[in-house]
Amino acid sequence: MTDLETRAAPPGNALRRAAPALLGYAAVRALGLLALALWSAARDKSAYTLLTARWDSLWYTRVAELGYGYEVRLPNGDVHSNLAFFPLLPWLERGAAAVTPLSYADAGFAVSLLASLAAAWGIFAVADHVYGRRAGVCAVLVWALLPVGIVQSMAYSESLFTALAAWSLYAVLTGRWLTAGTLAALAGLTRPVGLAVVAAVWVTGIASFVRNRSTAPAQGARDPEHAPSTPADRAGGGAPAWRRALGMLLAPLGAAGYVLWVGHRTGKGPLGYLDVQAGWRNGFDGGYAFARFVADKFTSFPSALAGLGLIVGVGLVVWLYVVCVRQGQPLPLLVYAGVVTALALCASSYFGSKPRLLLPAFPLLLPLALALARLRTSRSALVTAGVALASAVYGAFWLNGSGPP
Image (cartoon, rainbow, N blue to C red):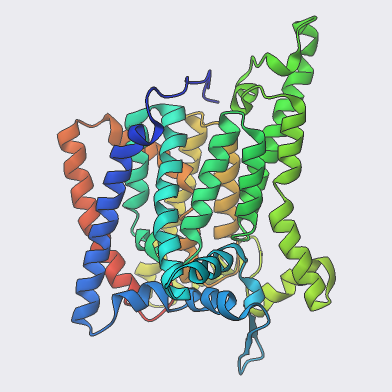
């Protein structure tokens, strides 16, 4: 594990330190939005509608406007209930619409834009803390350059969740356990994958407690809670035990509270939320449904190429995670990225959404960021510009497709 003896707080203003990363991120996203606007206009579609009033965006705005209780019954018997959508984004949409002239859809778009900048800043903070400023800037750029990066500008919950997750992980790395637990709880109110943030907080906290207990005899009369001497301790910042414990207790409250509320509302007990997800044909099957989906692609020649592409994509994700382990990423990042990846790849949800579900797994991108950071500035800028153009074009094409991202 990376020796986090830990970097001192960056000199100067934190926002000034992150400014190059945020400016680069804004430039890449602006290019993506421009490409979307041009492509949509050529197809006689509204780019703004694609960003704010299709697919999941409609479900979020409906929750914001009318609350929970809406459902759609399909001819095959499936029931799509808006209880499947966690409440933090709709709450923010409702609050913004109440205090501004914005509609619920407008508010969702504004929240996502601001949250995407907060997420970029959080990713920079994590990467800067672990690998330095140049790697932090490159990490933000790589996240912005993802082919599905256009989702970061949609009225979806990915940007909001990534912002909360990144800053919670940063708080864990710097020993701010109450902040980490609070942000983890908010992440748990945003998406089901909030479980990944909770897992990162809990595993790191438990590892820190275990390390402190095992090193206590060597500390003699010194307070073991204030003498971090191992990577696990340093990842937690050597905070007092009561802060770690309270942060760990706070972390699961958001997700647990919403899941229990759904179970009470549906009358199906603590596991009622799983029934809601089953109505959407969502569940965790260990990847069986996804494997069958990929295997079916090899029944004909044109689709076999898509199947091969899917296998390569999954292999790349797994390889990146292995590289993260080999490079010694801190424990909370490895736990978080591992859980996000497992939930995305092993869920029986709509398969076209899997790239989007992996979007919050930004620690997987740190090996790529390190490789980009090693290039000369001129070459790094050339690579970034080329990939940004390709990503913008792909994002415009993808979002103008028939299915939801």
